[in-house]
Image (cartoon, protein in one colour):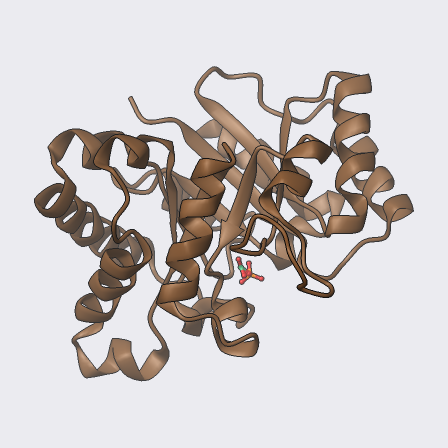
Length: 255
Ligand code: PGA
């Protein structure tokens, strides 16, 4: 059985005070079911405070970063290393989010270096892949997704891939309100898992959680999670408000 993960990506939202209000608001709503994990990626500045809150209140929420630098340390003004993330108590790091690729020019090569560094630092990489609208419409989006996976994971020992989580986030669905239908998402997840099985073996493919991301909301989470190859969700907008996030958590409990 693969674990299920509901992950919230706060992007550049929430001060420390606002993060505290959110975490207090979801107390009592976090599913206690074994095999179901709730992850939150706050901005760097709120990481330490969020870790302190979850420890103090015994809240079953896993805290992680939204990005990190690929070097261990050095003259990279404004950047954060994997070790710095670990020190705050973070256990995972989102890597290769489409906003990082598009707005901060992260290439598959850079993302590969970050994934390796995250693994070396004992952070779980949450590697995001996804096609743009034109690539979906041209029909050969799988070539792109396979390339993002093959280059993002190049040179990584198969045994280390057991610690990886993938998020499939079609760029045309992020922040647009246009979710992929559960059928389209399932079909793509199945193809992604098939590629991973061919390339790295059935055992890795069978145990690897593949999350769906892109306009996940309280009213579509259940039908997405019902799909056999969808192991959770990476959520932006709907993970910012207590009301919508709690509604998602409640609907997840029913699946
Ligand atoms: P969204 O963002 O849920 O607001 O579409 C998803 C993401 O960027 O991970």
